[in-house]
Length: 206
Image 1 (tube, one colour):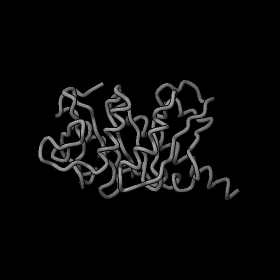
Image 2 (cartoon, one colour):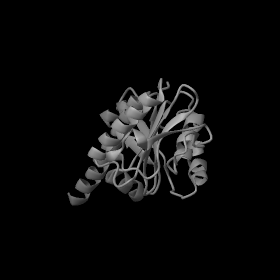
Image 3 (cartoon, rainbow, N blue to C red):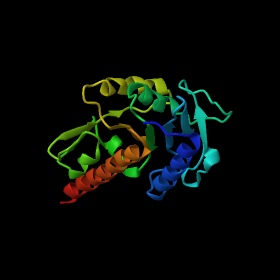
Image 4 (tube, helix red, strand yellow):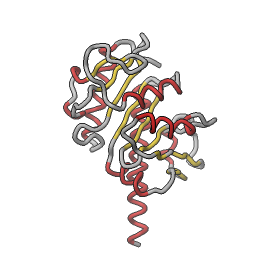
């Protein structure tokens, strides 16, 4: 699913930035968001903008290779967004959040994160029951986006790919058919990360 116009996509991205900042998921200038446009280009956040103070000027267009179409500089992680769009032609939006809980969990776990027995897992596309394991991969961080792309590629190529993934010590990537679905995936994953961190703390204190 694609946004009908750049203006529509930009307004939706600005709204998400403010919502994520209000929840503590976009500290400093962290996070980046994108939407697929009907002409085959993409609306993405401009590098260096605080997402809680994002305006329409903080959203730009890039082509399928990540090249700027309006002279602005895109987020350094635009390549990760584009790799998801290439892998999932049905994806209409990609969102990247930085909550302390998700980042802490990615550092705490030695392997991938398996979500088990949570009702809220049904917020993920295709999940219809709590009685299922949902695995979110955790890949190592790198300043070279090609390293991250290579690390996550085998998980995305699986018969049942994950709805999101984490970069260790960095944050969460989620996507959906449109920006509303992508936001729902991120919100569910962030809540589940906070719940996991709280449960582990309570078990330790018990």
